[in-house]
Length: 218
Image 1 (tube, rainbow, N blue to C red):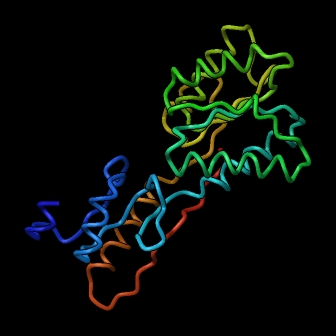
Image 2 (image 1 turned 180 degrees about the horizontal axis):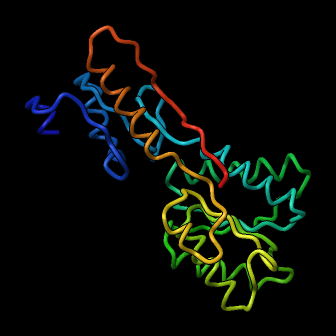
Image 3 (image 1 turned 60 degrees about the vertical axis):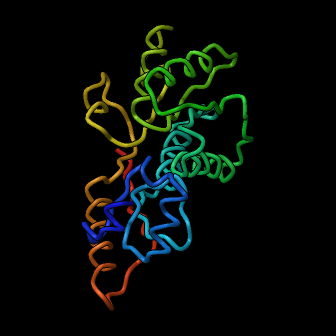
């Protein structure tokens, strides 16, 4: 905020958790100071932000599992106070509704984006009877925890259980077998945000207030 007050910079690109301060965002808006948010915790109507198509990405991933014949698909959510986490959960629910599957809340568990949470929640899911035959994790780190939990129970992937993550970080390619995941286009998100910020700085340039960059099932 001091940098903005002193005009030491011309604009900001915020990444979580820096964008999660209502007071800071309010002050910058009152100053009419240019800023763009990357994958913000909350997506306000009068702020410029860029995010991935989180809902559509998990929607596609869920349908991928449904087409493979899975009917009991568990879901491990990311931090519940983050908009991306809520959007991904809604994509899962939407796909199940479209397929005519009844949503079983007992196989939807909260997480916090970490490997340990994925491991702990997957242990709970795999202890159920009947257990899920597939699990979608809110990100790749939690999905890695799911694979660890499956290995502990002697389950092979994908023969005994299917696992899907989100992000397509390097870890997804290092796991064995490589993880099916939803690619979040980080480079495109950042480049789009910078273009939006430059346009906000230049007087008279049109600016998109919100942009969702397409994901891809990998």
